[in-house]
Length: 141
Image 1 (spheres, rainbow, N blue to C red):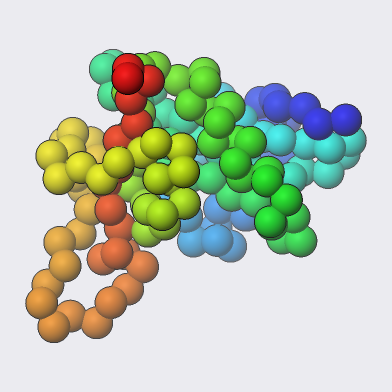
Image 2: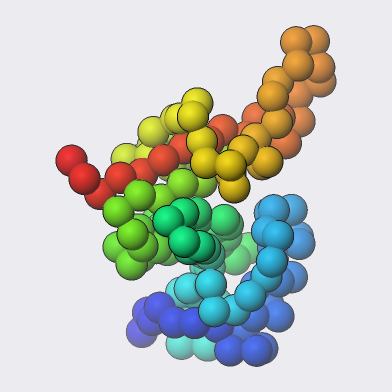
């Protein structure tokens, strides 16, 4: 049976290992900000929604090794969007993936997000860090 929940201490240690392994950027790892998707005892996917004042951001989404391509990441993103406020931001090097959820690129970003966006310097070697794009989702249509 699939369930969404906040991680236990043991589950959160698994999440932290995956965050490090996948080299996801997350400033403050705190279990209360995470939602995990489990099937029986197996951790399938996780995501973090940080809400501070009038600012909300999906900070990381990950799917367990061997579980990719099964829709678990999509389920986590949809759950975070459903439980979040009207406007949600993210910084990602996978903009095409998040366009499926109606995120759109944005050049004007909140100060909190701007520190994650590295300007591309002409002639510089591409890295994951300088491919990061700011995107925004709005429930208002």
